[in-house]
Amino acid sequence: MALPYYVSPEQMMQDKAEYARKGIARGKSIIVLEYADGMLLVAENPSASLNKISEIYDRIAFAGAGRYSEFENLRKAGIRYADLKGFAYDREDVTAKSLANAYSQTIGNIFSEAMKPLEVEILVVEVADGEIPNELYRIAFDGSIGDEKGFAAIGGQADELRQYLKDSYQTGLDQKAALRLAVRALEAVSNAKIEPRSLEVAVLERHRTGRKFRRLSQDDLATMLTETE
Image: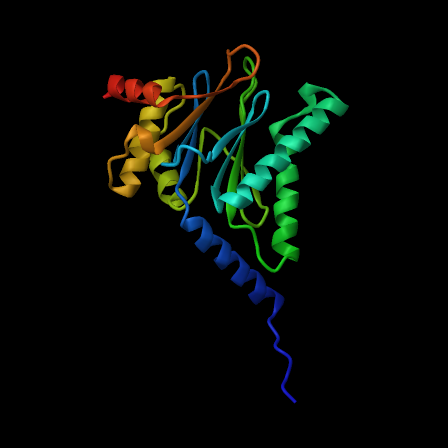
């Protein structure tokens, strides 16, 4: 009689983590930078039809790296969560912190209980009013959550990008300078020139009336990058 196959819980978790990391490593990177008047989100994304950066609610944005179908489901779930909470209570009660905690619980449960973990990393970003600090949360494939300050990076070259930004980022950048820094970081870690058509860029603008999320067009990017060269 053959002995039943046995894998220790520790080994199973290690295998899941390695599987998820390999899947995420195949994805293009995303950077979020805090600048003087808001938050800038920059993704390497040559696709014109599939978005890696999206609006979740009035002043909250979402970015996902890794397997598209999985972070797209998380994005939709986040919108439903925010809409329901805003409708049941108040729009001001919908915060990046509460959304990030909900994502952390969902992703962590899948990592612990399902055979296959999600191959995703996500960012939840909220721009604040006045002197209140902005909020930036990074949620990993195992549900662990990090409260980032100033900048964050996810995706295949996240470690290299974080190191580059750690050495180069300064507080108080204007929007153009932040965009230039993000592009310079992506080019440095990939050793290749990145054209505006390969970028997906959006901002959360602190002083924008109503919804704070705005996408930058290819013409906007070309103009801004040319002006800062």
